Image (tube, rainbow, N blue to C red; front, side, top):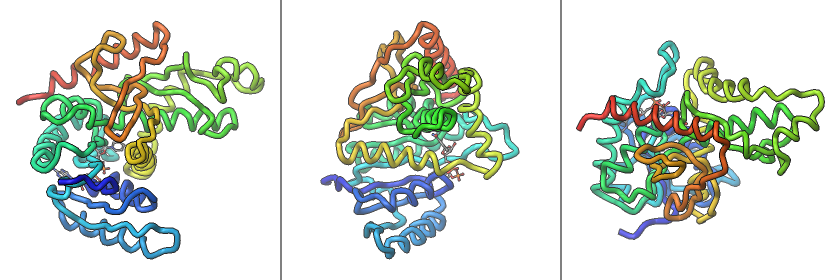
Length: 318
Ligand code: NAD
C-alpha cells in the first residue's frame, strides 16, 4: 500500500498518547491521525475530543479517529506510547517497567509488522533504550526506521535549565544529554556552548553565576520525577519532542537530534541502544554522529551502555 506521507498512527491513548495527539493536532504537515489502544473506549474518546479542536480558526482540518493496526498499512509514522508508566507512590524507576513493556513491544511490533515495514516507528515507552534495542533487533523490521526518543527530553530539560540560569533563549543553548534516558545519562559538557561560546567561557563572562555541572546534571535527572510527583505523570515535554522528530521525518529536515538507536561500534560500543546525536531524514535515522567527547565522557557513555545491556540480558526471555 502506498504510504500517506502525512498520516500518523499513535499507539497508546494514555497521558503521553493523548498529549502527542493534542500537540500533533496543530501540525500543518499532517492530514490524518489515528489512535489505537487496547482500551478502545479511551482511544475513541481521545480521538473524538481531539476532532473537535479542528473546527477553530488556524486549526488544520486533520482527520482524527480511533482505529486498529490495519491503519499502520499506509502510515508514514507510528508513535508507540503503549504500556504503563511509573505512578506516584511507586519508586519512579523506568527500568522496573522493563518486563511488562517488553511484552507490550512484542505484541505491538507483531501487529505492526502484519501491515507495514515502511513506517518510521518512534518508540516512547520506557525504558525506552531497552525497548528500542529489542524492537530494532528482534523483529526483522528495518533498523533505521525504528527510533527511540532517548535523551531528547533530557536534552530539552538540560537546555532549559542552562537557558534559565544564564538568562538566554533555550534555543541558543547547544549541548546534549547522552547515553541512557535514565540514571546513567550524562552531559556532553565538552561540546556544550551558548551561541557558540563554550560553556566554561560563557560562565566566566557571566560573573555573578557559578556553574555547578554536577548539580545541573542531577537536576536534569530528577526533574522528571519532580513532574511525576506533582502532576502524576509527564506528557507535555515528551509530546513536543515527538512532534519535533515527526517534523524532521516528514519534511526530510536532516535535523540533528539526540535519539536512541543500536550502536554499531561507535566509541567501541555495540549491541545496545542509547542516545547519540542522530541525523533524522525521511527514512528515519540516517547517521549517528560521534561528537568529540572527553575521556571521562566516553567512560560515562560506556557505563550507560554496560548498564543498559545488563538490564536487557537480565530481563529478556524468548
Ligand atoms: P498510561 O498508563 O497513561 O497509558 C498507557 C496506555 O497504554 C494505556 O491507555 C493502556 O491502555 C495502553 N496500553 C497498554 N498496553 C497496551 C497494548 N498492549 N496495546 C495497546 N495499548 C496498550 O501511561 P503514559 O503516562 O501515557 O506513559 C506511556 C509510556 O510512555 C510509559 O512507558 C512511560 O514511562 C513512557 N514515557 C516515556 C517518556 C520518554 O521520555 N521516553 C516520557 C514520558 C513517558
